[in-house]
Image 1: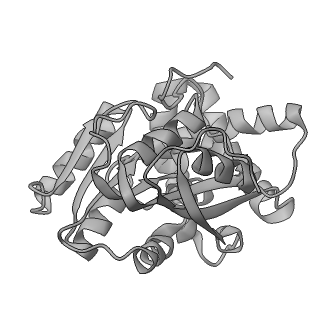
Image 2: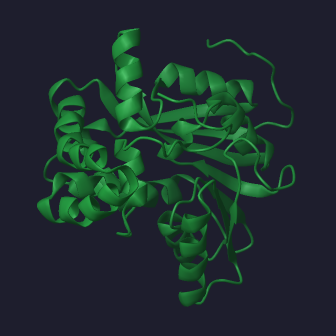
Length: 279
C-alpha cells in the first residue's frame, strides 16, 4: 500500500474505511450510538468542559456528544471536504458557536497543550502514518487529569505479516493488538487504562448500527449509494471494492474473528512518559 502522507488518511485505494468516508450518508463510526452513550457514562462532561474528536469526519459523533452534554467541542480531520460538512451541520443545528472543526493532520493537531477534558480518537486514527505520534497528539492536547479514549480496530490474535499487510490495504487502517494500543497510550503519559471489548456487538448481524459507516457495505441500498462515487473516484477498481468488501469484513469479524473493536480509556498524567514498557 502506498504510504500516506504523515498524519493523513490514505485515499489512493478503495479501502473499506475509504469507501465509508466517501459515502454521504450520516452515520456513527464503528461502535454505533450505543458505544458513544457508553463513553458518556464513563466520562462525565459538563457544559464547562471541552472535548475534541480526531478524526471528526462529518461530525456525527461530535454533534451527538455536544447535544448530550452541552460541552464545548472541537474536531479535526485531514479531509477539508468532510470538515466543511461537519461545520455546516453544527451551524444548521444551532450550535456552531460551541462546536468547531478544523482541517489538520492526525499527528499535528492545531490546538494548544492541555486544553481538553476529553480527547477521543476514532477508528480512522489507525490510518495515521505514525500511530504513536497521533496518540501523543491526543495526549498533548488533553489537560492533566483529563481523559483520552480510543475506539479502534484491533487484531484479536497474531496475524501473519504478509496477510496483515494485505488486510491493512483492504481495510484502510492499521489495526493493532490491544497491548500495542496500550503501550502507545502509556508512552504518551496516559495511565489507569480500562479496556472494553465491543467485538461481539460489531459481529452481530442483528445490530448493523454498531458497524457505523461500514454498514453501508452490508446492504444493497448502501452499495447502490456508494457505487457512483466509487466509480468516479477509482473506476472499476472502486466498483469491485464496493461489491467485495462486505464479504471480507464479514469473514474477519464473524467467521475468522481475527478483527475486533475495542474501547480503551485512560487518564492523562502531568508529564509525558518516555518509552514505558508494557507491564
